[in-house]
Length: 87
Image (tube, rainbow, N blue to C red; front, side):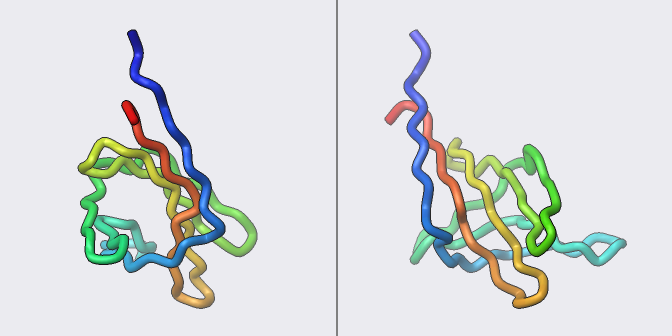
């Protein structure tokens, strides 16, 4: 039997993100903080561009999937989606 997937959508929850800027200077999330909790990014599953944002679909070390949105013009990060397995 497959575990149930639970998705929670947020109204753009502001977060603190630790990034790595590669040779092209584009920031990629390596870890992020939800309150006092630090979640390491195990993998970047997908990424895409929108007119005003860069999006990253990441798998956290906790096994959950998150979509992080980066507003490069304002240097702000937000979490726009969270999905956990087995809840």
